[in-house]
Amino acid sequence: MSFLSRLYAHLIVAKDEIEIYRKISVADGAAFISLLSQGKYLDGHSGLGLFWATEIESAYVGWADSETAKDEVLLGGYISPEAIDRHGDHPNEVILKKEATIELPSVIYKGKEYELKHQIFKA
Image (cartoon, rainbow, N blue to C red; front, top):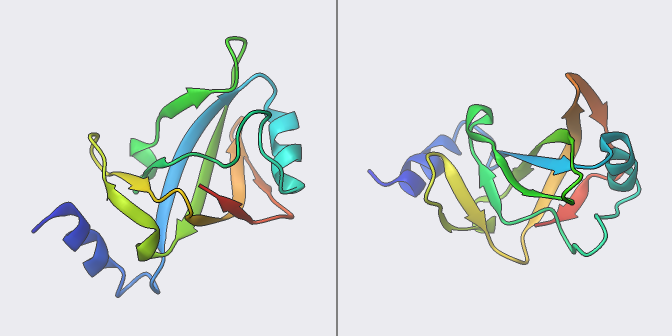
């Protein structure tokens, strides 16, 4: 059974939503969370990224905000099955379609969960 087949089979239990996770390294974690709460992205970015993991343990830093990035923020959200373009090269990795939307209710920074006011983002 292929990765996507197993993932889609899981959806019967998960209300047609797939949980996804991603870590982002930024210069200032608190400032990044503030941007997300306003529905904004980092300068030079038009979304949160295409590469995500379906297991929290598989989430890794795919890109960094700058060379001075020192803070790691864990993003955890939900997507529809149609948002997946294909399976990535890493275990449990999915690559989202560019037009995909992500429901991102909260993030984790320095071991603390922060709820976001704005929760719908682009990949």
